[in-house]
Amino acid sequence: MLKRGGGFYQDDGPGDSIPDNLDAVPDAAPRAEPLHRFANRPYSVLGKDYVPSQELKPYKARGVASWYGRKFHGQRTSSGEPYDMFAMTAAHPTLPIPSYARVTSLASGKSVVVRVNDRGPFLHERLIDLSYAAAWKLGYIGSGSTQVEVESIQPGETLLASAPPAAPNDPVAGLAASAPAETTSLPAVQELRGTFLQLGAFGSLDNAESFRARIQRQLDWLAESIHIHARDGMYRLHLGPYRDAQEAGRVAERIREALAFKPFVVQR
Image (cartoon, rainbow, N blue to C red; front, side):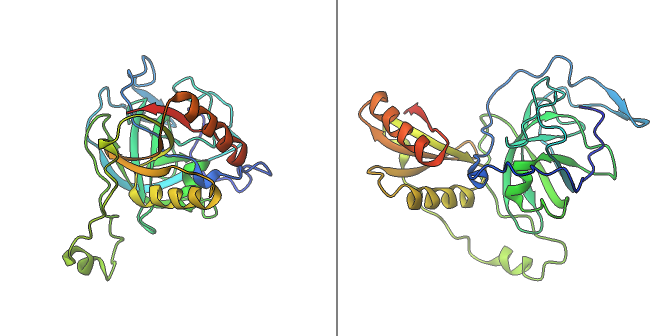
């Protein structure tokens, strides 16, 4: 989708079709994937040359994030996949396709994990273009852009969510750095074995806990516990355990009827 300039369009929103559960769209879950055969070759746009990385390696940068929406919904991305404005994806000029990155708003400290499957943006020195859903979760749909930090995530590495980057001239940044770290006790779900339903995967503990609380409010009939399973820098919500996949499947269908999304069965 190289024709896109990465600008913010006042009429590029979702129209009247915003999904009811957009806040609950889970972060992208990093996994090992082969790099695209063609999407990582050098290219030129608007008189500027770009040389994408040919391998997965550490990357961290700060800059301006924009977003793109319905004008490109369904169009082909640089990976060849159709663009889904309600999925957790992003466009970046040089990060490998596909790859994964944690994007953190410097204003709010909120983070999302996205899968890079497109090229752009190419105007106004912008760093990254997020999908509508990712920008919604970071809270900058109305403004069109925001300052962010982008950090690559390698599948399989342990990259636990860190403290939000301090905003420039933040008067409390020094106090926060010197304060004792507050530890959060997570249920030891890794010690449990059996069949679970995965409700979502998030790049930050705050997002996972927020979604867990929302699910518990909306599905007050659930008999099983929702555990937060921390692994490889991701926080996965696992519901269970169940006796077998059939029992889990029946609960998954009830959840689909109630919330219009269906969790999937995982074995531990």
